[in-house]
Length: 317
Length: 317
Image (cartoon, rainbow over all chains, first blue to last red; front, side, top):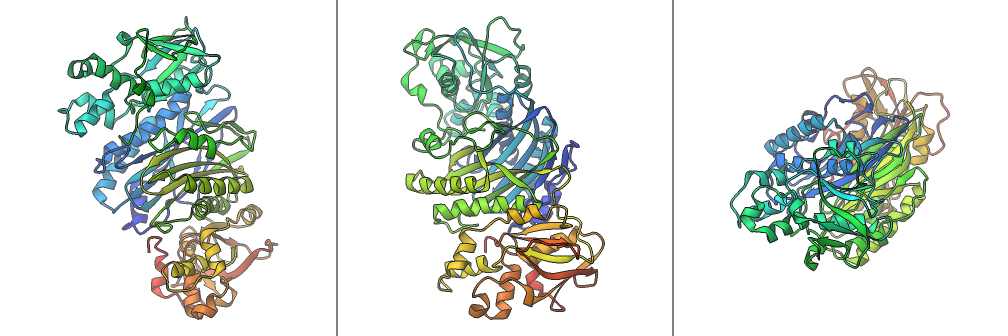
C-alpha cells in the first residue's frame, strides 16, 4: 500500500517524516511506500477486519484537535476488533485534509504512532488527499481459528455484562461542546480518548456467547444482539447496576443520566452475553439478565424503555 | 466489519438491500453485518492490502455519476493489486454521502457489485456516514509467498514495458470536462471506467523485476521505479513506441499528445521493468530500455524531459 501523490504541500516529505516507520512486527513483509503492503499470514488464525471513519462536523466538531482526532479514529476501529476478541495487527489510514498545516499533521501523526505502538499496530499503508477533513482507517487483527466472538448466540439464561466504565460520559461531553454544561475532565476523556477494551475482549474468547461494542448507544446495540439471538429473548436491565460516568447522576438527575448512559453513543465499551456460573474477568459489570422472549424486548427495572430511547444515537446530532 | 448506524434515511435498509450479499468465496467466515469481518487464510500465501480514496471535487467532478464513481473507486484500488501481481479477494467500503438519494445509491451499489463479481471480490465490510461525497476502499488480495512484484529491482539492461493501452486518454477527458474539447468516447471510457490490469499483473510474477501502476503519470511513476532501482539507471523512452490513446495526436499534435500520455495521471496501466529475452505477455508494449545511470534519468528520443513533466500529475488540478 502506498500514500499517493497529491497536491498537498510536500506530501512525499510529509509521508516519509510522519508516517513511514520501521515495522514493529516481522510479519510485515512490505510496509508503507509501494503500491500495496504485503503481510505474511499465521496458519491456524483467522483475519478480522473493520473499517471506520471520523468525519469532521459529524463524528467530531468541525474544528478538531489533532490528537483527539487520532485517538477517536483509532479508538473506534480498535473497539471493533475488541468486540470480536481479536488481537490488533495492522492499520491503514486514508486521510483527507483541507489544507496542509504542518503543526496539525505533526500532532496527529505523533498521537497516531504512539497509539499504534501502545496497541501493537503496524501502519502498513494509506492514502492522502485534499478535501474536507476526514479520516478512514482499516484495522486488521487476528484470532485463533473459530474463536472470534460475533453478535450471534445470545440466549435466555445468559447474564448481560458491560466491560469498560463511564457510560454516558461521551454523551454528556456533547453538552459541553454545545455550551450547555461546564467542562468535566472525565467526560472530555471519554469523548476524546475512547479506550478500546482489547484485553477484556481477548479474555472473553470461549466465554461470551455474543458481543458487540457500544458505539451507537447501549440500547441500540443491545437490539443488535437480540436480533441475532438464539430464540426469542428479553433483556432485563437494572438501573442500579449501570456503570455511570462520574458526576452524571449529580449533574443531570437519575432519569437523564440513565438516558445518556443507555442511549448516548461513543462510549466504546463492550456489551457481552455470558452464560451464568463462569469466572468473568474482574473489569466487567453485570448489568442484567436474559430471559425467554416477552412482548417488550428490553425492560429497565421491570418497565419497557421509553420509545425514543430505542432509536439509537444519531452521530450527526 | 459492519456498516454503522447513521442518520442517513433508512440506512439499515439501505445496507441490507444494497450492500449485503452472500459471499462468493468460502474463505469469508463472516461478512457485512457484525463489528468486523472474519476471513480465513491460505497457508503459503501472503496478503496484499491497499487503500484508495475518491473525493468528489478532487478525483472526480463535484457532481458525479454514480456508476462512474464506483468504477473509478474500484479501478484505483484494483490497479494497486495488479501492480503487485496479486489476486483480488476482499473489499471494504467506507462511503460518505451528503444526503441519501436512493437513486444515486442504487446505481452506485449496482455498478459496485457488478464489478465485484467480475473481479472475484467479496465486499466484507464498510462504514457509512454523512458528509461531503467521498469513498475510501480497502482492497485485499493474495500472492503465493514471495511472488509479489514490488517497485524495487529495476536494473540496467532491463526493457521497460507498458500493459494496458490508451495512455493520455484520461488526461484528455479532463479537457472535455473543462469544456475545452468536444467529447470522445474512448477518453470518457478511460476516465470513467479505468481497467485494472489484473491478468497482466498475474502473468508477470517471476518475470518483472519491478512494477508500478501508472496513476500519477508515466514519468512520475517511472521516477519511483528509478528511485528504487538496483544501481544508478537511466531510462531511454521512444516516442514512436508509446501506446497513445485514440485520436490524441490528431487532436492535439505530437508534442501535447506526448505530454498527456507521459504526465497525465489516472490511466491505471502497469509499468514494468523486465529483463530482455523473456516471453512477455502479448498485451504488453515495450516503450524503452534501461541503461547504466547518466546525468538525465529519463531520456525521450535521446533528450532530457521538459522539466515541468517531472512534477507529476496533480489530481486536484
